[in-house]
Amino acid sequence: MRLSRWSPGVRLACLCALLAWFPVRADELRQARYAGTLGPQRIGLILDVAGQKVAPSRYYYYRHLVDIPLTSELHDGTFILHEPDATMTLHFVGNGSEDGEALDFNNSVGLEGQWTNGKVTLPVKMQGGGLFSAAPAGHWYQSITDETDALFEARTKGFCTAVAKGDSALAARYVHFPLRVNHGAGKHEQIRDASQLTAQWKRLFTPDLVSRIAMESPHSMAIVQGYAMLGDGLVFFSDKGAEVINLP
Image (tube, rainbow, N blue to C red):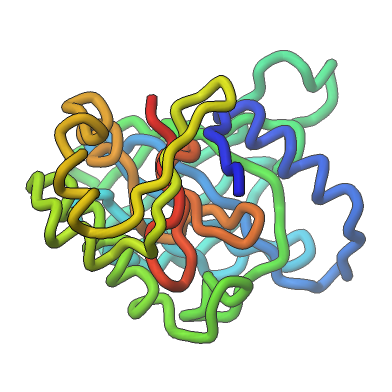
């Protein structure tokens, strides 16, 4: 199994290309996924879209990983997203490749705007896009497992927490061995069990890799080839735990 890291641009282009092959009903609930910053804080945003209307959606802070519900409006290309006591106002942003066409979910590269609670106003900048069939509430990972998102993410969060702590024994509890470690340029190795993971921990989990994993969100992750993908492909998870790691 070879699951490689994807650059954000390549990932977005590939996902949008896949979308073009699957026609959807006008009233089908679809979702767009974004990641970025709200002021100094990193956030994730899941926009639910039904036809030409924005349905109730959600966002979360990376430091909490708890969904904040949003009631949503779309007016002349501007998203107005309300949470209790605060509002985000966002618009599509492009990279010039739209060639004069109006920006939408599929030809934009993200959203920008601001968040305000009436006293404080902060900038919002996010990357992402594309519209995909929505997963049922509480079953974001339905293509991977029948278990709830909370149970699935207990393992992904557990793995990331263990990596941040440098605890190889704890991390091993959230790994499905053998663990494939890709080194790039066609090179890889297999970590057969928890003992070998501990023995090779410092060599594999360098400060750079640990820092990169800590920067990503193990919540509402992208689904790629039947696996949940952390970040741009640092770690791939199955329903049994971490299966593949791509070294920077």
